[in-house]
Image (cartoon, rainbow, N blue to C red; front, side, top):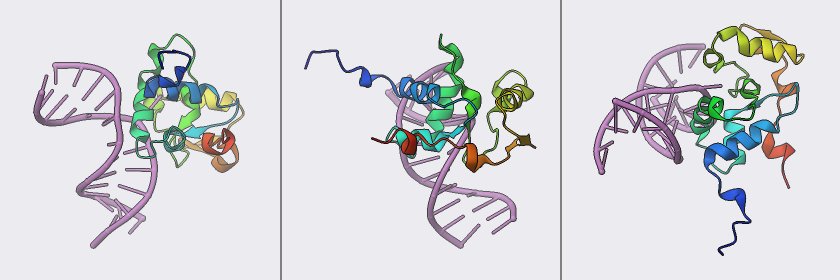
Length: 117
DNA sequence: TTGCTGACCGACG
DNA sequence: CCGTCGGCCAGCA
């Protein structure tokens, strides 16, 4: 079909950005969960790489709400200063000690589960 | 064009 | 518990 009425053909990066924007305030998600939601369970690295390119996007991408599966702020070094990511999360009511989100399971937002059809 | 890197994850010994 | 390796795929020299 020549009908461009299906914007789902966006790049992998665009899909990642779309999911990250859906992460609610005070919640966090993981690279692997987002990759799995996009249908590529093994492409968690691409999600992280997409975050690296997120600053090129015009819209604000809450990249600070994306951490690794351990709830560790593995990407904090990409916010200019390593304290920015932690402060942003703490500003949303999260507790972080030693780059580890306290009660990670309680604030974890899984797109596969939350956005399931 | 080829080769390497990377904000990850899971498996193996 | 720890180190190591393969897979996934986009960007860059």
